Every structure is written in structure tokens, then in C-alpha cells.
Image (cartoon, rainbow, N blue to C red; front, side, top):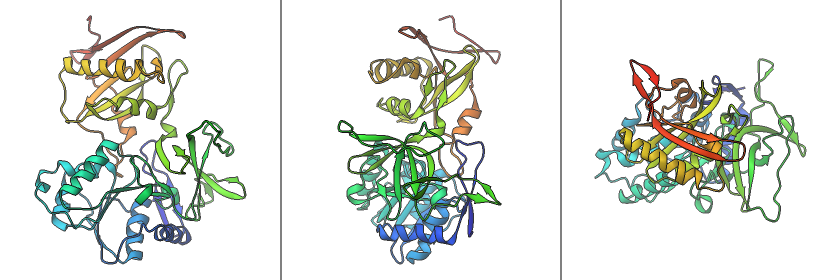
Length: 409
């Protein structure tokens, strides 16, 4: 063992320790070299990836050393200072999570800056919308850089990066193809005690399921004799389950959907898969981000979904505008969509300026859950039976003497 990192803890109860060996870390770096994803000698690398995550320790520090590049090491800074660091240090390579990189085009003090020094810009650790990726690529071109956003996918369990999207595999919203010596297999997410690989049929354009990974960069999954990460055998190789739900098209290019463990069951037994609803809600041109978590509904005596929304212009709406936007989402994005169920309608919508972030700069779903409700939410009551949808009421909760009560409207 050479290193103990930790998972981000964004959806689990707490960060999980991950043990990695010298062999794991050397293999992970070697794969990036084989894929041509390594840095160049003398490159100046600006990053916001903490060392306690494998993404920072392996895909930044160790890869930097092996590439002969230079680290611009800033121990701690705020997200609104990231653009200032770009202006100050003029890096050749920028690594970050989507939330940090997507903030760069909005930095006024970079408006007249020549950024032709930027040869690569890379994100990992979370997903970036197509709109944000296009906006960032356009911003780079306007500032003299020929770089286009590249991205990787990985986990602490296998040295950070396992797949990479560059050149012809760098398609919008994709996570590319597996690195050399790494095998990505899509398995049935509903079978927990073994791996059941999914296969294409003639009429299928893509496979959808849980990602399992086999690689010499994968942790052995033990610490102090305890199994932290279970391994599964398939065709003579050892795999770990990632709990990531992904898609693979017939060209072998992968797209990340969501974390499997974000799913939850409504009070009536319906399985809510947040990523399915989030993608549909984000089709509304006023909405930049949507993240869905569960809350306990006293009326239904069980869990229901609440949608947290950030708008494209980052402005908050008054009550009338908020209700109108929620009506658009409910009727245009969900009710009129033949692939959506009324049970996928969030029963509450909260419009906010930004999402809470973890120390790894990912959206902190635990924090969204723990925030609870603050009375600013728009309520959506749906009358439904097992066969039909009845009346839908969309209204704002009134706050009287700090006690929530429903508006008579």
C-alpha cells in the first residue's frame, strides 16, 4: 500500500477510505500515457483537485511528476477566485470539476485576457451539460485558445481516471472510451450478488445499466483485513461495481447518467430515478441545473422528490414567475412527454442561486437532503390513481409566524 484516499461522500453516509498500491498508481499513470492523455514537459498545470481524492493525487500530482510538468499548487481558494488564478498564472493546462470550469466564462476580469497559453482544459468528478461545454469552448476560442474541453470518468477506487474523451471520442456529454488495460462492462443494476452483463439486441441503439470495471489500477478493496470494496469474478477477471449508471452506444462510447445510489422509493412504492427527471427538466431553456433529492412528506407519510433548480441567468424569480416556470416544467417537460410518468413530477420545486458543493467540488446531495424545506418551495399536488391523473395544483406555501400553512388559493 502506498496511499489511502477517500471517496467524496456526496451521496453516501460518509467518505470511504480507498487503499491504493504503487502498482495501482503506476498502472493508472501508464494507461494515461498510452492513451496520449499525459501532460507535456514543462506544462504549467492549474488545478483545484484536493490531494485526498484519487483524482488529485493520481491524475494531477503523480501524472505531473511522470510528465515532467509543473504544478501550480494553491492549497485553498474560493470558486469565485479560480478565474483570478487563471489570469495570474497563465497555465497551459487547467483541471477541475464542472462547477469550477463553468464559472470561467462569467469572470469579468478575464474579458480582455489573452488565453492562448491554454492548450488543454479537462474536467472530471461530475457531469457538465452540453450548454456549459459549448459555452466554455466558445469562450476559449474568443480568448485565443485552440483547446476544447476534454473529460474523463473514474473513481477513487481505480486511481481517478478510467475512461477519457479526446479527439474523435470527445463528443458532447460523453465520457469517452476506457483507457488501455481497462475494461468497462455494463451489468444489470438490479442483480446485487453477481455480475450479469447486458448485451445488444438487433433493435437496440445503446446499452443502459450499471458500470463494472476491471483494471490493474483497481484497488484490492481491503483495509486492516476488512473488505471495503467487494470484487466480483467475470470471465476470469476481477471487477468492481461502480454504482454509476451509464450508457454505451454501438461505437463503444460511454455516457454517464447518474449515481445508482441516488435512487429512492416514493411512499407508494414507485422507484424514483433522479437522473431521468433532471435531464427532462433541464430541457427547459430557462433552467441551467436541476438536482433532485428526497424529503419526508408528512401528508403522504413517505418519501417524495424535491427539485432544486438553478436558472440560466442566476436570478431568482418572484412568486408569480416561479409558479409560472413550474407550470411550464410540469405540463411541457413531464405531462406532455410520453416517456414520463406523473409519479416523476417532483412535489416541491426550490429555485436557488447555486448548488451546495462538497470539498471535491461536486454537488453535495447530502447537503441538499439535510437542508430540508425552508418554505420557499413551490408545491405541486397531483391527484392520481393507478390508472389516471386528475387535478394538478401548483401553489406557493405561505409562511405565517414561521409556521408553514397552505394557501387557500
